[in-house]
Image (tube, rainbow, N blue to C red):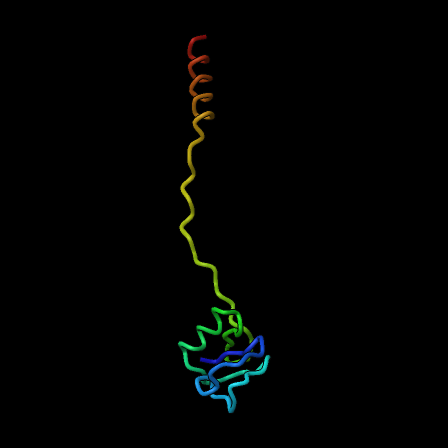
Length: 88
């Protein structure tokens, strides 16, 4: 997994492919261990980047639109108006 560190920290450099356990900020690691990378992302220490080096943006989930609910007050008013019109 390709990640970019946001903060400097002391971690497991071997899992990132770094030469040292002191990891500096704004460094891109091309072949980081997936599990360790997800841990760093979850802690806010790194972000996943795409092939161009740009941070990947999570797409919002597509939700099914809610069915329109009938307004009870408007339905009762329409029924009352209809009944009043028939009585005349």
